[in-house]
Length: 222
Ligand SMILES: Nc1ncnc2c1ncn2[C@@H]1O[C@H](COP(=O)(O)OP(=O)(O)O)[C@@H](O)[C@H]1O
Ligand SMILES: [Mg+2]
Image (cartoon, protein in one colour):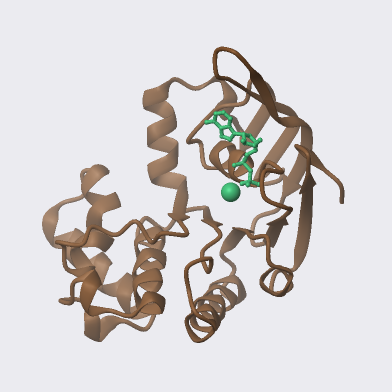
């Protein structure tokens, strides 16, 4: 059984006047421990695919099995649970709360999961250690570089020990030094066996992954 199995996944956005076929029959498998890059030009459907893989949205038709469970059939409440327990998200715009110290940002997924306060703090600090920011736990995002902020976001993604890290253009807002820092961290996590799906339109970023899935006009071409 693969960690991820997509079969005939279609996604149509219905905006009232027009319908956009963002995904037009996608079949894909991703194994546990794989590091996969999803590439494609702007508008090809990468983010739509990420939203479906991340259980932020469901297919219009087709099936999505995550760790054997058919998530295309789940209620919104169950989807939220799967999202929280199984998936760690990293976005282009970090999505950190500026008023919260680094460790407070990192503990948030555990707060939503109802983990007790002391355990939350311990696990948040351990996750910050893993991304090399153990000494920045009390800093707020504004006091950190872009690369460090994205590493805090990776720590937040890791804190629930998810089955998969899903990163959508995680280096899109970073300079080359910070890009190097974040990609190096993803390499390390991959070497430790973490499943990573990285979405990017940049070839040199995609090259870090073990395999590439190319999307074009809502279809997979490799
Ligand atoms: N919420 C939405 N409503 C309507 N159309 C959308 C929505 N999100 C994306 N689209 C359209 O779906 C297509 C794929 O978009 P997207 O998945 O964001 O591509 P990418 O991430 O590769 O740039 C595009 O034509 C886009 O305009
Ligand atoms: Mg996108």
